[in-house]
Length: 233
Ligand SMILES: Nc1ncnc2c1ncn2[C@@H]1O[C@H](COP(=O)(O)OP(=O)(O)OP(=O)(O)O)[C@@H](O)[C@H]1O
Ligand SMILES: [Mg+2]
Image 1 (cartoon, rainbow, N blue to C red):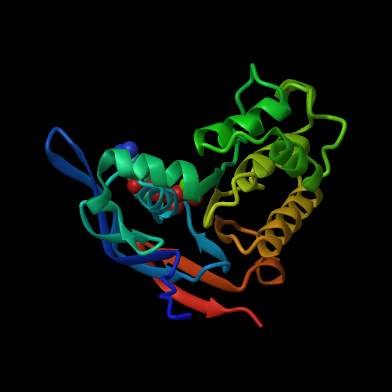
Image 2: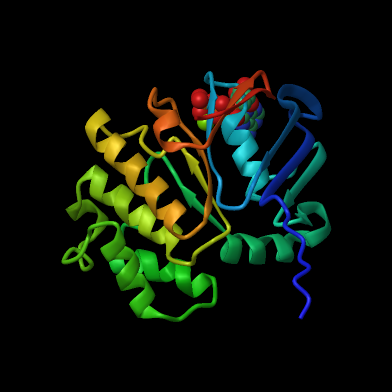
């Protein structure tokens, strides 16, 4: 049997530009030729000052917004070539997000929030949702609504929702930005451990001084460009 297979980077971004316009005029060049790669299963921390383009970059990777020019490939597939329907399919099956403000649906329980992500990925397996909640330490709290959970617990639900479909890539935008330092550190440990355990790549915007404790690599963004790319020992 042939063992030939091609391993693509899970993310490949080449010379990406994003201009925001108002009334046809360019008001901001949020990305100015950003390039980066993330290998399958790699944990990468993205640093950068406010306004440097980090959220804009994640939105382009997620296919939620389109770049002005440049290339984004996820799993070796060029997002531009996929079309809107193809990007939506890819997003539901291969990508997950974790946000600063958790973004749970307030009228759904913890379990239902997690199960919904599975349903959208076409995987109707309630046991997987239960297992994901157990993996983030929320056994017994499956039936709680978001407002009945602490901030750290809500972020655990968001992590369960992100990992449950075993995506190729998790994008996290300041996932601990709304938590106290100790809770935030536990959340970083949790998300990076779960990613390593299931070989999911993680690209997370963070300001933690402990980034190298959790990440394989650190990227630095300045004015819409990735200026530094450092391996952690
Ligand atoms: N929808 C938009 N329309 C116009 N300008 C925008 C829009 N979104 C972002 N920008 C601008 O693009 C630049 C990059 O913003 P972005 O949100 O990507 O920064 P960031 O690095 O995520 O910052 P922060 O650390 O504060 O979250 C900023 O100058 C911002 O004002
Ligand atoms: Mg941001």
